[in-house]
Length: 112
Length: 113
Image (cartoon, chains in turn orange, yellow):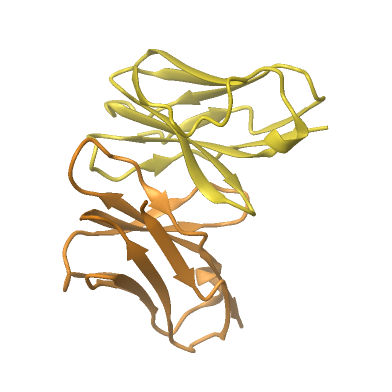
């Protein structure tokens, strides 16, 4: 069974204090790993897709990286508006399984 | 282009009542997904459709849950009868292709009393 574990569950940072969120996964084969951002009362908002180990993608203060067993979401010099829950999900490869498995998320709070 | 549209945004009902949630996917997307989100279990896939045909409903918790997609622009998730443990946020998502990014709607917050 595919599993996704995100850590920490919650992270509190001061504005400008860089850090990383972790997403560890167990899947028979990886078709893609997705990062989403979710604000309170809203649906998940797509950030990145990573397909192979070594791949990196960046968007503003966020950079996502991928290894064979985990992904990191690096946040550089965060601002209060980066506060949200960040969700990681994996899509397995092979067969006819096209179901995303989500982690429970990391709640990020950035204080001014 | 408009995103995924869901209605109602909030629903409060009493145990035993029928609840119908509605979703309009992004135009041109051929996959539609229904998820449920709770604090305990996170986001869980309930069922997904391809070209209006249900492909995998193994996540549907019980026979009380049913989903339909009569055409490419409309889907419903029905709970009958509803129970307090069904209280959650229900999301609809759509994608263009089975391995492509899923785009989520704003969700329906369901409270069953």
